[in-house]
Image (cartoon, rainbow, N blue to C red):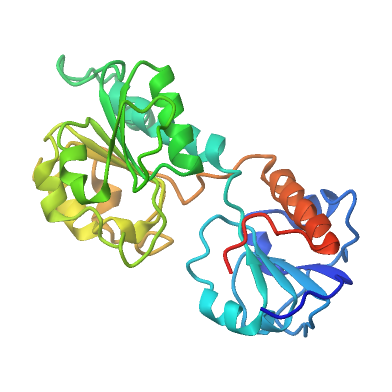
Length: 312
């Protein structure tokens, strides 16, 4: 790693508008001076510059520090950042409540049929479900695969609603609200009795296709998959087949192998699949949460302290 130089300017790359309105984000920085205009791909950087961005760009490797405004940084080549001596940070740790609430929304809707009632409302149809279909999530088992910030937040909320919560993680350190921990090597043991299998793991070579044919075969036929992690963590073709063939009951999905989800995806037509457009973190104060994190790291950068959420 190269020696850190003093930070002269923090730039906001135009890609942040994928998730945050420009004016709201710029205005959120009370203590940090930033240009009012977002920068495009024609900007050149040096070691005294920092960039907050949604998407990676090769020219960022000339800056002193780059902040990814999302938790997932798998699109960023961390080896290249290490080689260039450029600090890379992400926005992990601020999504527990937002993504946790979306996961619970999926679970409650799938249990109490909120999605189906809305479908029939759109058709002006007074639909009454089969007697044995609705259920309460109280006393049901949720298996949370990945117990980082988001996974812990989901586990805490499930526990508060009276669910039996188990988790999958490498560490055996206890997690509040989680009754039993399983090592990733025991994934099938963890998911076999769960009504909800909730995925919050990062996308890595080890987690790609984590749920596929064998895992769906191991699950209960009345179980639901909740994916608020990354699309490739689930083998989408296998998931579609499992739902169509009643090997599992359905799914709540915020992430997909291809985004936006293609028009011809069979997922659109499955009654027991709920789709949201990768907006688990979307709230009306997301720009404030990101700005607070970036501003904290500006202070750390200037004082030579360890940057929060450093990943390279």
